[in-house]
Image 1: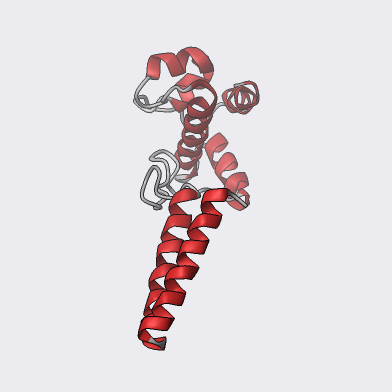
Image 2: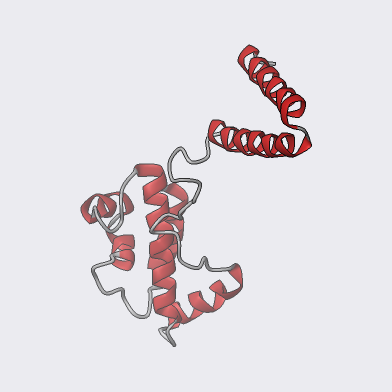
Length: 155
């Protein structure tokens, strides 16, 4: 055990014993509650909570939306390839989110704030599909979708 921690524990036990001797059980109970609360707050601080965002872990701006499950990907891909329904747009938005996360994690490039750097990294064929400022092709060409999936593996 750390020497300073042992010293603090000894001082707390001594203070608690003094409260019992001087005031009885009521002040000793109050002292124990104060010491416990202080110990919990100190332990939380020492363990690193509240060091960056007061213990509230806010999600990243780009990734806070509902994450798509695998259950509806097949339909999104089919509708994106055929141009039916609104799943084609859903497919493009999902690919944009995935590419935004991959570019931010691996290359520290924002898809939305640094489009030129992102376009250089993903290539012109995939960029035509995930460009947030452009209009994606409808229906999505199968070759472009395959290039986007392969690009995720190599990015």
